[in-house]
Image 1 (cartoon, rainbow, N blue to C red):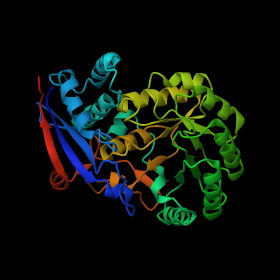
Image 2 (cartoon, rainbow, N blue to C red; image 1 turned 90 degrees about the vertical axis):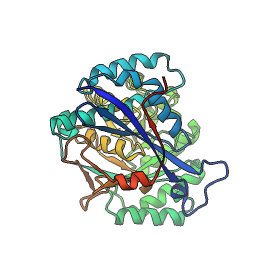
Image 3 (cartoon, helix red, strand yellow; image 1 turned 180 degrees about the horizontal axis):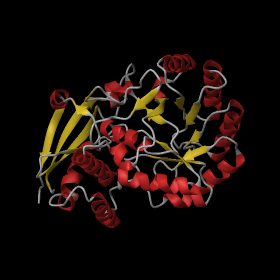
Image 4 (cartoon, rainbow, N blue to C red; image 1 turned 180 degrees about the vertical axis):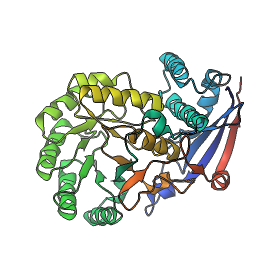
Length: 375
């Protein structure tokens, strides 16, 4: 089997979906352009993947696939995913202006093909551990600007059946601690709550919030500082009881340093940030050998989140999956990303990614199609 060509469709959604009911801020891009990339093969089997695009980078990353990686894929056997992955890893050495996330996304399409050839879901190829994973809901910052909005969101998420709620608050200790207390009061003493501060805090502010999270029994304190601030993460992890969750933006091969230095308590990652399904399984194996939990982050892109679901169903060290804004669950029929009555996402049972793409919807929202190569 050989890969014969690459096609990418640019799927456009309005930024109004993200900001509603508020207006899109001045200076923010008015649309999200999601690249949907298709790897074609000489046996008629296709592999699908997508990319992340909230800041206008979607079209640029789509052209990068065709300009940078075409010759590393076309003419090669997609079943030899490890050989392709290692070749793309080596190429990354001089791609200074690109992250490894782009070739990680392509790795998802290789696994999709592999599963279809084998007639098995990706989770089964990985060695399925379970059939479903509990899901928590993230409340984007624009949904919880006031105490009243926070109360509405917490009650809504509980009523929808989610197994936990993550608050995304980055206003600092004075603004955020009252909201953290209110959420705990509404949710009750045992309901899982998490905090994500989006890497904006000073150490002093993070320490105040961390002590509060200890008293409120939050599940974790996510990304209080930029991941690059290893010393600050290390100091905070040692000072508070609440586990510090970080490493989301850390590349696969930098990740061991954070664990060895005691900078984080729980490791963060997903198929987008950790070099595809191949890469994230290496990260999960490393975490299990070193005794770390690995919590899977949303990729905010439906096909990548389906890949995350397969990975989570093949991993023991992942407690939850993350469900973000509904706008990121588009273009799929009988969508496995919607939670069931048991508060879980259930692993698809069909081969590969195991989803049915709604091509009518996709084509209606396609604004550009890129085929082949430019050189």
